[in-house]
Image 1 (cartoon, rainbow, N blue to C red):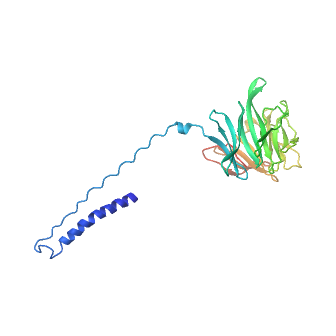
Image 2 (tube, rainbow, N blue to C red; image 1 turned 45 degrees about the horizontal axis):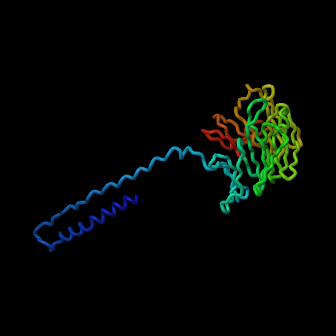
Length: 320
């Protein structure tokens, strides 16, 4: 629009002087009164077409395919620091904590060779959990072992949690206390046991105690937001067994045994049970086959409400 208006203004400035001269020439008494005034059509030169904008150079494909300089960034609870993962010029994985006040690093931690960070989270402003993994042997087969590390982001100190346990999976955290005092972790006490739920205090003593003993066939335990273990699930003898209780005072009862061929619900993953109720959050398939976030009644075993479902994509993870 600006370019168009500018062109019209230029044409008007070109025409105005010519038209004014012709009007004076045609006024009676200014020339031969007997002769009719000669009417001239002003000639306007056609506007030149604007030059085509230069075509920008092609952006190299590698600019889109290269690895990011950093990823998995998270803010501390008070918003004063940012943590993220990155790689050095040599390709070594690093975990960094950056102060946002002066954009300087508090800590940059290089990962040992053959170790990877699976995930991490801020518990409080002075407590962090980091899951690390490495490949090892399990009865002759290669498996990836995971372990939990407790970090103090203020002084950069580290502590390996559950040092005495040799289970393959050691990072299945099902509850983090709101005040950061402890965590609940599902873990096998030995490789021959089904998983227990253990509480690990996040303090100098680091006391560990079992809050839920193992049950045959149960591999997955779910706690409510107060840290009460409310449900356990697992396959045993080709049946999915579901144990549930309504509160901390009740006993776990088996509420369902589902044959694999009778399981028509497809993907279903319990995320959390709301304390003081029988409802909680699950990821499950809807009518169109998409995995969405739903409010679920565990006592009645039925959906209450679909909270979010994308028509074309499945939901992989949810942070509550």
